[in-house]
Length: 146
Image 1 (spheres, rainbow, N blue to C red):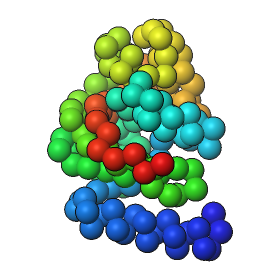
Image 2: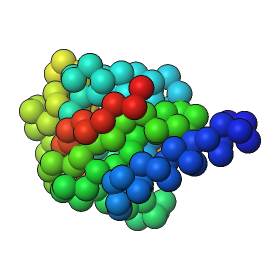
Image 3: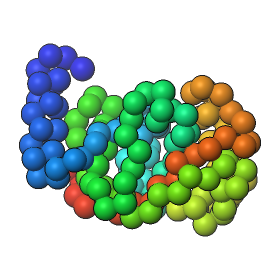
Image 4: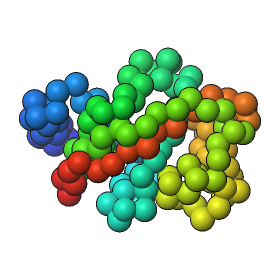
């Protein structure tokens, strides 16, 4: 991100955080392509859930999602793309994620597809264990900034 884009993104985030006090920022995925795909799935209405490894919240200092809080999803360049409101949060082991949640993530058409894709994601990002704890979040879109 160039310096101009950086200051523009920071200003946009600041304005949104004034409108949505306590809003955290986050980015979907671990690559530009995945981030773009996931934002597209949210915009289409297919993706209404997300998850992350609980260990990453502790390691990275990222705040856990909180029911009722609005958060700002950023695009890969750091600009606000969406404002979402958390509607449900559960800590659940990877091996205990049910098909309903997996399908609500909108990335796959089956629990097995979700397991395969998420296993690969976690292997790329700190390691995988079927018993690892996940922060499973359901959300609704409050505002599409695209």
